[in-house]
Image 1 (tube, rainbow, N blue to C red):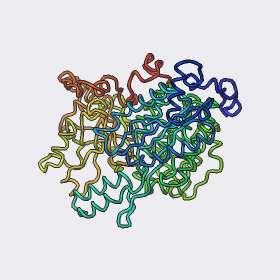
Image 2: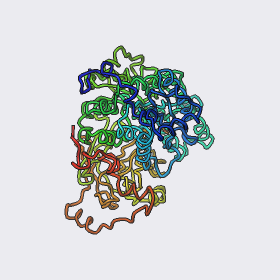
Image 3: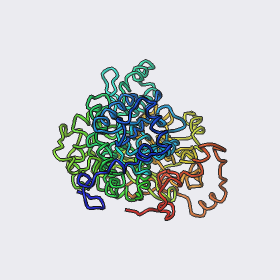
Image 4: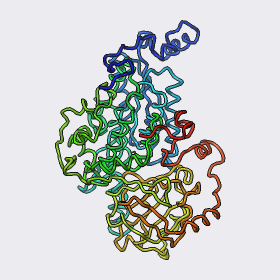
Length: 588
Ligand code: FES
């Protein structure tokens, strides 16, 4: 088992004394300021016996009336508090901004770093000895953890849990994936407006995050594999009574973590990050996880490169048969044994000696995990896909990398050369994509520029570029599509994403013109614009930088400091000082 620097396991090391608690500086001193803190705590109805000498645990709650994925978090916060009280701690709930994927425009990604900053500063400025993070909807998971990693107090994540399966006329519906699918069918005239209304009412029918293998399911599983939530927590459906039990247990456990002084810096090691990457790959998880894992790793002081991601992808089979790459949904995954069962199947692909929040190793937590449906969670010798759940591409069109999710694409498109049809930005695409006069056929390559971290801004999930209506009506359902945007984890198709550097800052994607030939070769990991170096240089010299999109406020801060996709889109000033001074933290 991993040991702390004193050579002790978390359970064996000397426990913190009450006077050593961070909150003692607020509550324990015999001075005027501590009097103020105590009198104002009394104002809220607490007596000294409620908090004196006890760990103060901040519950960072991203509940909001406009976040349907977190609508149960008011109740879950109460269950976490119950556990904290039971274990002899003092719970303090602190609301933080909610990044509601369906509602926040232009994209929640623009605000991931803001929630990370808010989390860090809430923990820094208040008397927190440890924290429980309530998140799950896409960007909330990485944001909360990025902030908590920066503060490095004992931290435990409570994942929101997936919602129940969708249902319409007896058909099982998956978040996102079936939205895109039936939208295409509606545009092609294959379903009616009445059908579409029925789908609208039945596709999201309980609290919880998207139940396909989107960013939410991927990132909460990654957090569990890294060791930052209780073992088995991430797969429990949000409305299941076992989810409430897990919340209460998390509350009891964080108090013990504070006494043990068990911090994220002991848990989020390079080996744990590799476990997170392998897990995302075995799930055929969202491409967004790459950006978030890179950002999380860098916050922990361990750089994760795109090439390391690709290296691990070449030897990681896809074991989870979950949409959009597979057939089932998260509810099925839970009944089949959940993430613990899948991690157990992964065996020696994982480093099972890594430490987790409960003070045990990942391997100890996986002991006895069983698969109850081997079609949902596949054995290593019967994978859904043998390897390459994700591929990193390079070439003159993406010198710093681009990504594609091969299992989610029409397979004959993975090696394809086609004529570019270029849209200069999202509005240009929206205005022209369905124009019957657009010169395009199924062999063309659709290119969207200015959709990256600075160009959009916020790198929205526009990467599943729409197929023109006239081609949909001909039966075309996939084409090669290239952008510097991200794509929802619930999306699918031969979509090349995260092209870096982005077009807005003068990356080569900015220089593509209608009619150019583009070569995509996923097995060879290549993405090239088939023009000469001289022509590329001519176009670069003629390129004029666009006007900044923000002149003031948070948007201006974002544009000035956000990094490119291959660096995790974090703010330069939020990364550890070592990372900034060296340019690159240690690569593993
Ligand atoms: Fe919240 Fe998909 S909308 S996870």
